[in-house]
Length: 292
Ligand code: NDP
Image (cartoon, rainbow, N blue to C red):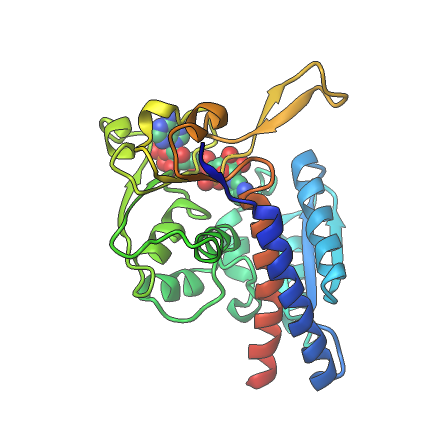
């Protein structure tokens, strides 16, 4: 049976460190690091993510405010809101919760955020720095995965890391991070056009699933002893639950746990780390801005 990697516990440790950093920042600068979360529309999952982020930020001593706007907010008005937050010297971090409504150009919104306040790490300037291996605000989910691996002692140096999924928010930035000097993994990235994905997955010492399909990774796709990181968050119908569904990952957890050496659960794995890294990025952004 695999070791279960407890993302909630690791995230709690990170959050406690961030709270100390935020308190030190407040002592030095007379104000708390400030995060503004922009939520457009009433996407149910986004609402719950934003609530969790704002609550965690408040608990860490970050001044967090959610700016909720209706789904029909024009792109122009959204860009104007971002320009206002960019210009506000008391704001350190800006997070625009994705996805945005169809009439809004997501890329334009991402590019509009001041890179120094881009706590999601999605701005092309920050993505460029990430790929170059320069210090930057790193995207929260990939940074959280790396932190989880580090703190639980999963060796990445020389390991073959296979990342399932090539999205701009998880797969691609994670591949860049794992390739960095210091982490030194040999990285393979798979996607929907990959030929014989199971054969590649079976070679992985570290297998990361970020594709968004419940139970996609089965036991026969996992090398015995591998570390398996499950990023997926999928709703599956469950009449026994009051809300009618439950959340599962991309990995067939019970079967894979019999083969893997270590495995992250869903919930309680990568999700809490994503939030913890957002808090860390906010304090980091505040520090860097104060140092300029
Ligand atoms: P995207 O939908 O943007 O990307 C999914 C990727 O998976 C794509 O690269 C796609 O390939 C690939 N893919 C889809 N189906 C298959 C398949 N059958 N075989 C091989 N590859 C496939 O998803 P995200 O990266 O945004 O998110 C992935 C999952 O992680 C989701 O469940 C999401 O909810 C979750 N997530 C969790 C977070 C957390 O904090 N725990 C944070 C962010 C996301 P192609 O490019 O060819 O289409």
